[in-house]
Amino acid sequence: MKPFNPLWWLLIVALSAGCTSLRKASLASGEHPDKAVAEVSKLMETALQDQVDILADDQFEKGSDYLADARQELKKGAPAEVVLEAAAIAKALFEDASKTAQARRQQADRILATRAAALKAGVRKNPELLEVLQDIDDDLKSDTKQFKRVLSPEDFSEYQKFYYSLEARAVQFRELDGARVMIEQAEKQDADDLAADTLRTAMLDYAAAMNMITQSPRSPDIYNKSVITAVASATLLYDVMNVIMGAQGTPEHIALKIVQQQRALGELNTNVGKLKQNLETTQQSLEEKESKLARASTQVRFQQAMDEAQQMISPDEALVYQQGNKLVFRLKTVNFRTGTASVPETSKELIAKVDAIIKKLDAEKIVVQGHTDSMGSDTVNKRLSTERATAVAKYLSQLRGGYKITYYGFGETHPIASNKTKTGRATNRRVDLVVTVKK
Image (spheres, helix red, strand yellow):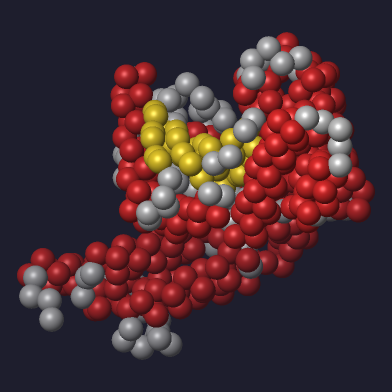
């Protein structure tokens, strides 16, 4: 049993005194704080789906605040009374908000249907789009006087356009953001000089897909083909630039041929025996045959590792790609908080999955590369990226993979996203694992 803390008692008294005018709902979860928080969290999610956050924003926001307090106190290990008090008030506020929303819904039912389509497209997954949504919502609440009057036909048409445009942007983000990131990274690597034709094709295909989505955001059968083409072109550009950056001075047409060969070798994992037989029957010298077979064997292992990574790791967690004769694991969700170098607990499972794949590769060496966003000075970022790379390297060493581990910090010098947004900065605070395998 934890020792009595008088500060908790003061907190309980303060909550009770400050909440005398607020109704408390009965909690179906009983006297279990963790279950109470889960119960009210589910209630809030339902309210969001029903768009209660706009129809009864004041009550919804207060409920969200009390739920946040309950979560925080539960995490801090506060007494059950404190957590249950905040959870019960939050539940009551969400219930009241739902009743208020129901009374107002008839006045805004048609425009809310358009808003719901934008939410379904994934607006809340993009911070920038979420800010735009909140601005539109604020204007809508003002023009309808908190849904006490109906929009004029002209105003309805304008808001419908606003939400429809937001829906299209959400679909574009969902379907093409990966392609955009790859194109932007290639541009930063001087692709306009090094791979001008491949870059131009990727940009044209990307623009075409964006236009198709703008015209028909609710019709995947119309825009899917253009999206597939755009992603394929951006991926080709990404692969070509990896070849060029891995061997400076490689002409674009040679890099394209190398990528095509690498992709063809990707089929070897299903028929290694046939490849070996074909190699043995050629008229090449023994040295050439051994060298090619070694490269093919490495390529097979790389392809098998990439296939396994696709099964074990989601694209949101990590990106796995070949860079010359090395395999790179770009860890996306080791999202260090600004100014820190501790490996988040939530990221250790991802690192363990990557380690399991690397062990099967028969890896010889791993270089852990740390990167930061642009916040802070060059000197601080260089030091911080080195500390982050060191932290991941130390955790890898604890997993005893049997390979040599080195680390290096690049600071902010190798961004893969814009440092002008919160999401971009989080993406840049990353770690890359560059794997060299035994021949």
